[in-house]
Length: 361
Image (cartoon, rainbow, N blue to C red; front, side, top):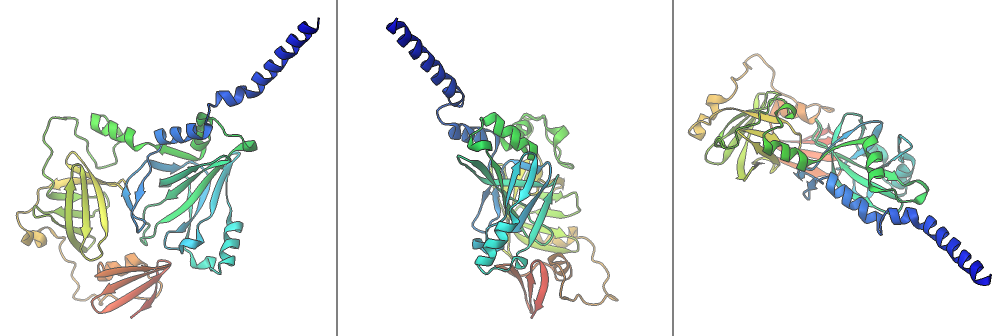
């Protein structure tokens, strides 16, 4: 009888142990590693250079619901950014904690340019952290009309401090962010079957064996900007009535423009005979061959607007960067100091604070 009771007790204990550990066993030996693996499969991170510019494009991210509080990348590094949390179908930003931290560091919150991103806006993910209690995504934007980028953290906390399965986490992430993996998009482009989903104005070439047109040529963006690539490796970019110059390099299907006046880099991906801006996903359609020599610049430049009766351009406090460059063209040199951006012209220095003219010398 004692042997039977002992056997029964051991059986009950074993059953209880298996039932309590079943959920843990179902998640695998390392649920954190499983989530990291799933994120690596679904999300391609964009990479940044030392100035916070996008070097390599990653997955295109679209905000599906709610809003994200973001701060400019020109803010002091110590200021950080608000941490937006998504839980129970709602997005909330920890503005109180962030403002409190700024106060302790004696940083005026009003000195930091802010942006409220809404549903439909697109971003890049440049980093993520998988921890025991949450997953955090570091989100980066393209430049706005004032040439400012914004960034923030999106946090997805785990309920009851339990690590969810990778599929559960991805389902929650899909509620707030739509993720388009770059490797999937590239695979479709290479197969020649992405024409229906290609950006407007960018034609794909379904004939895989046809030779690629030469890179030198003329290219048009949907907004009317005009890019001229010459055979000697130089380029001219026409924006409105102004133009800027520089050098370009081709590495496989990658094209990089380096602007002479500012040193700014613009990256394209070559698709057939057209160009795709990897930062903005804007298509530049090939519109013609390049002239034979750089002396042909003026031949393709937009006709000059009569200015005989027009007053000379002026700079006023409160103007945006776009307004200044429209009147005076691109600066000879550009500098960034905290929330300030300085344009250097031949006989003038214009200082912008939070994207608006604050001083002219």
